[in-house]
Image (tube, rainbow, N blue to C red; front, side, top):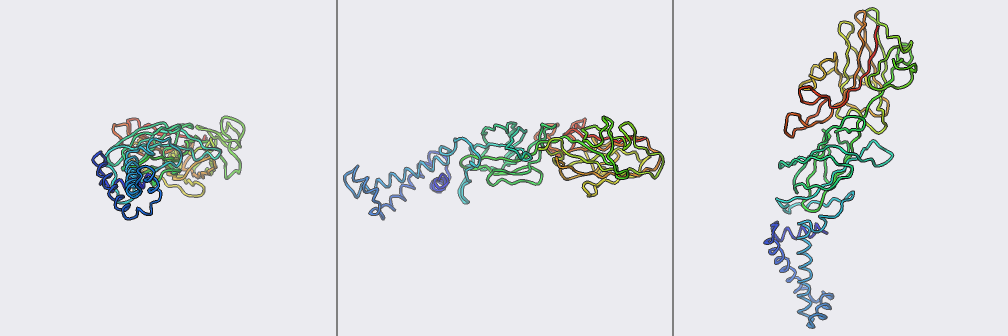
Length: 406
């Protein structure tokens, strides 16, 4: 109903959002009602009855009562819709968005409306789990808004009739958050962009409710299997080769948890399957993509082959730039993986062939890419595995695995 009022009001007043516009709009609407009522007054039985009761003279009373009643309803309805007196201050609820003005009407060039931003963990299938993230609303007209409360969100002011882009930045750790928005749960006209941001245009009337889905960030656990021996590989921490181990695990061999994998001459191979999964069942690790960093000296080994669930991974170390190049410079190889790592087990096939007697421990690390606000000042937000500070600080904690070699 507020949109009908607003359309009539905006057309009548020429979009003038002040008291001059109100007077012009009211006179215009009353004039139209007057002409229509003069032509149809005999059919307005309710107006006739009301007029006779109030003014005693049926014809004139019915006519002018119609003009006054209809004119006031349209006038105050339109003014209320434009200024948010109706629908502009009610409590928010899911799906509470008011529609934008119809095409061809004029949106006021100044003023604000209200937005509520809510985040759900879409990996949680047991219930509606909301949690806090740090987010930024940036508009086409230069507005920049920062917020952190998306668990019990409150409405905040934004410019109306303007396109905004919403970006979430990474929160590290198992209780943190990914930065890539993966779904729009509610938000009229909102668009999910390929980079994991969301764009929408704020309404000219009423309020806007935006609810998105973002998984919480994962930590990882691992299990190793020797394809040649057809046995699970022990890790150094216990005598159970079948269990999963967490970050910084060192795998030994299929013999026991104290005997390293033996490479004594050129031409010997390692052919392992590394099972990897998120520790928490409602999380995801890679966010905006993963790197898998490998330490494997070229003086002892030829270039290894890595496959994730049967798909060959590409070494991209030579293409890295900036802070990522600085952060990952100590790895012999850096492979790119664009999929997800959740609680569903992924299988990384790792094959290497020695070119000498080897004794250096191997390292296979999982490195997630997220979004971060530049550390150099300003409002730019970048995507990467490392921030743009002098130390190339990691965005997410790196998950390490090691293979003991003797």
